[in-house]
Length: 201
Image (cartoon, rainbow, N blue to C red):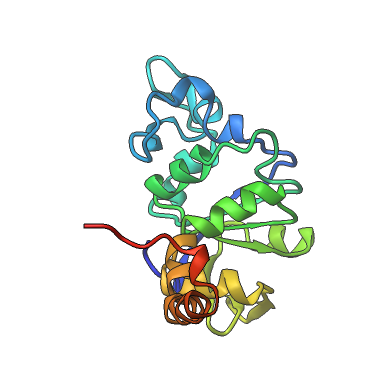
């Protein structure tokens, strides 16, 4: 994954509560089990006035000219609710979204964001609303969100912060402890050799 350190982007507001994963990426847009080919279907029910023809709806926020190149979206309460489909985050990543700031997140969606290099930030709704269409800077090492003269603190646990800063998935994170794992295994093999099958030629 691409490490997340700092990001400056316009904050595109999709300020709706209970945005579920089927709105983020409808099941009919999931044509493979892979992580690619999903960006076109991102927010398809809202993004297109005619989904089949892929006719953009100019009133949807991501289609507005000021959203071009935006890598941050703003949401309301319970963002990413519904099913646990990881495709929702894959679609966001492929589209170019690196950060979602919302009043609150569905827990599984939040975890999927972290595992895929997207920073989920929870702020009070008034603060989220105030960021709409502003150019903001998200500084993960400093745990700050800055918009003009206004600064907000972001809170994230140590393990997810490490994963995002270093671009690690859960396997990579486990492998950071490989020397300790191997040392424990070697000591246990000596203490309890009968537990381990010996390699045969």
